[in-house]
Image (cartoon, rainbow, N blue to C red):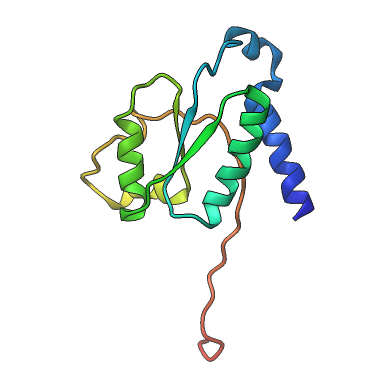
Length: 136
């Protein structure tokens, strides 16, 4: 857990303005609270988003408001984010399901490539496939 927290802190520092030239270009951001849409209910990815949001708020001086919008494998929250003004005050905490939805669903209410821009990786969570031990 300690390694995870250290890695998360490093990512937050990089993502929150440690890059001096980029920080100079947008030194006045944010001027109001930032909405951070999470595609799932509290728990798992929500915990990572809250850790990031608190650290970013401490560093940038504005609250990062966690807005849990679960449902439809993340489509509901992603649609809300896609329809928000493109002003940097609504961020989407996307997971692998966000990327996979474009392959699985033909008619999404948003275009994952056109409507979103990746900012950075906040965390890496490994998954594994398991089966009952009696299967070959």
